[in-house]
Amino acid sequence: QVQLVESGGGLVQAGGSLRLSCAASGIIFRISRMGWYRQAPGKQRELVAVVTRGDTTNYADSVKGRFTVSRDNTRNWVYLQMNSLKSDDTGVYYCNIQVPDVGREYWGQGTQVTVSS
Image (cartoon, rainbow, N blue to C red; front, side, top):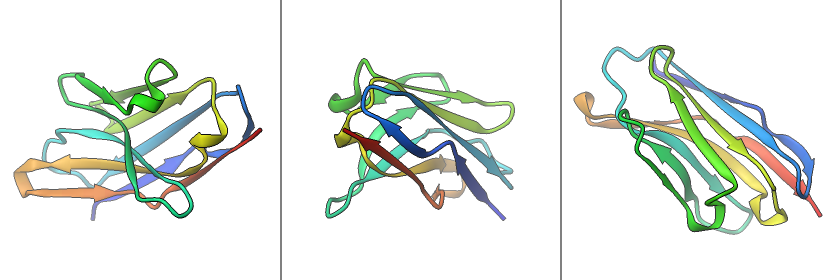
């Protein structure tokens, strides 16, 4: 059974930093893309940052230069280093992975990030 477990969320002041981690287990096939999405209250879920197996990254314009996504292919972990946090970064952050060999993507349960101004 595939399971994604996120950690590292919390409450931080504006300008501070947090590091999110996501551990994927129960994966038999190769994971292609891994990354993070977020959902603020009253808004749709949006892409934050993703990384391919070849380490190509893609970021939302709003986080470029502040967030860094990375992955560990040997352990199937993905990370999100968030610096210079703003109140607009507040939301639930979800880990996402894509497994093309089975034609599926998987989501974590979400971790809350709250940035106080």
